[in-house]
Length: 468
Image (spheres, rainbow, N blue to C red):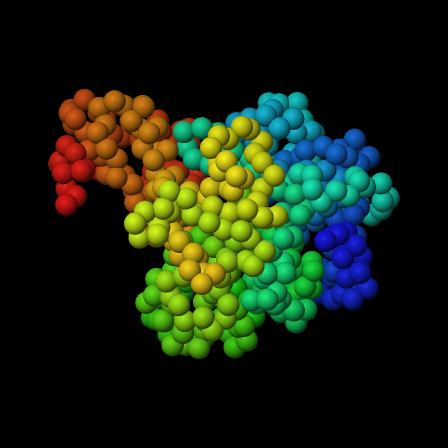
């Protein structure tokens, strides 16, 4: 699939169609499809003139038309785009620049203070200041190669720096045809999205695939306004983690029939299992939630429900082009899910051991089984909590880091309370540890998603003794 050719063809089909809506002074204002592509190409021209063709650049910022135009400019036309989450520190960005050999940092205005703290000698480009000034387009793009790295998405735990997953354009657009079989996006569709573009699913399935389908995108202006803006936008498609669907159900006292307006076609849920009772709440309102399962390493492609499937235990129908198997299977047929196919990442930015089987299958780390081409997940080899924006919080990594900081810790039970990380400490000797000081020191040097918001000391010494 040649995405550049598709975009050129779509310029004829979609041309003056309103494409992306962004709030300006509290009012949604659109950019037309052809104007958006022109903005992307003019920025790509600027990057090439700055010597950034075939180079890696860092991209960080709040969802916006300018951020999205920069994403397209780099990923499709000039080099490799390394997307970083909003919560990373200036030191994290500096480390990424050095480890990747990145030549520039592209950012939106709200990131200015953080970017000013980066000591590394690198070109810093404020997208909000620069993009409105550009108009020249000179198509001196990088050579089109669907197999080389076009995108880097950072993922990982808390005991080491996040690892970068390398995705090619072949990886990225693998999922388009399987998606069409299940839930085809159309030019008449309207999608409201709040997930950050540093989130693989949002970047690929919401944004990149909109370039092919021509659907209209509305950018969430503030996550505190999701409910209000859903009623305003009245989307036909909405994608979220289960926690968002739970919040919506709570806000409407389980009567969700009016939550999205009157024209919803597809609701997708991913990032965590969705409870049967929650699905029933939406089904009773005439709304079907389709499960979607994938990983960053599979370019957010793996399994999605077919509409009308009543199997509430499955996390989706496996994409037909994938070869999936389980290894280390137990007597119940449950094993680690492994996959081979064109969606599987071309690698990592740093060496990562033991992620492939000897015969070339990627090991997902999820335990489950496949039956009748549907995927069933029963747990993880490595415990993970799912944050409200779908980010993975690796429990064992955080536990290991805390125990390394203080050997007096026997165990730390981690959970989510009000969407924030809560820790219950089990200590050998409570008098030897100052929990306030320990947690403060830990929080100084961790990703935002891993911050401990609340904590307390157990009156027991070992957590295991409380478990039957």
